[in-house]
Image 1 (cartoon, rainbow, N blue to C red):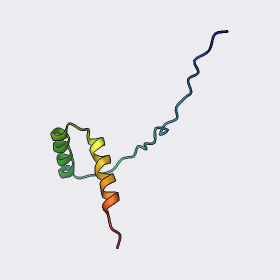
Image 2: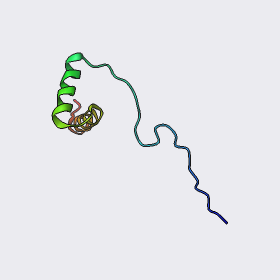
Image 3: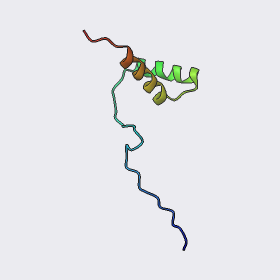
Length: 61
């Protein structure tokens, strides 16, 4: 009997990431673009790195 390849449908967001939009200034966009070019990383990757760092290093008063 021939085995079947079972491919399960993957639901959106199942990779552990969520998509949402934010509003940022032109100045911040320019800074991200420059940093992206200098580091050869995508803006998305940089935003995730920066957010993770900020969350870990913020202080609530």
